[in-house]
Length: 142
Image (cartoon, rainbow, N blue to C red; front, side, top):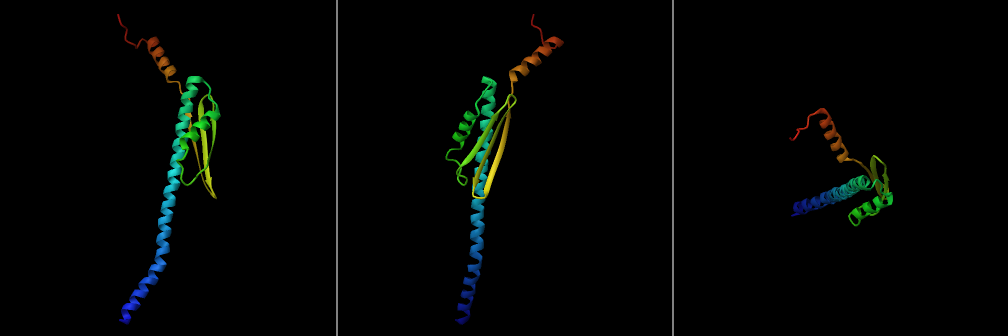
């Protein structure tokens, strides 16, 4: 009977050393999942805002940075778990819309920069048609 009690006691001591390591691994993995979730939320919201800004620049030829920042905040509202507050800076130029977003929690932080070109596909299509017409490559209907 004495040997069985000694065996049970050694198991308890081994588990007392092993459990903190297991808990640290579990908590670290949960923390990593929250970190990458928030990074993906910020990245997706910044890219979507840049694309929306690009389309608005194409349609109206001007978009206010405050409007883009409000769109970004609308997309990230109540979606970030670990990083509760985020900051955003939007720049809308003639050729490109740029969104810079960052978030901090203590000493830990993340930032993303997304860009979208202001394109005018209708002008490109017109230019191609014009070139085909001048080169005589377009089929003529008689």
